[in-house]
Amino acid sequence: MLFYIGIMLVAVFMAALSQIILKTAAMHKQKSILKEYFNIRVLGAYILLATSTLLAIYSLQVIPLSMGAVLDSCSYVFVTFLGCYVLKEPLNKRKLLGLLVIIIGIAIFFI
Image (cartoon, rainbow, N blue to C red; front, side, top):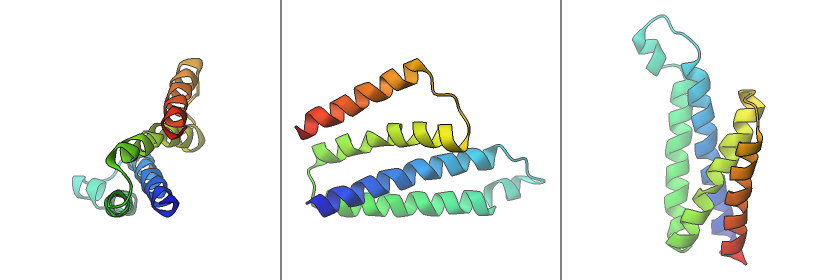
């Protein structure tokens, strides 16, 4: 089952990464509406999101749904740190406290 948990975590990370890529794509102005939706960043992010969905479905065939929901909450942690690293968003005390609560919740589930 550890293998499927790993697949689920990879899927959650891929979904978080696709959100960051979509945000970076939205920050770049395009010359036309068509280019806003059909450029390499947007298409790549949607492909990444679709792949992450398929991986999550595959892993949820083995792991319990309750565990899937807990592992899915890791996306908040991934998006926060990717936002700090890629988008240079500040990490303040409120965000850290929220992440701590999420991580404690995940730890309680697995204990």
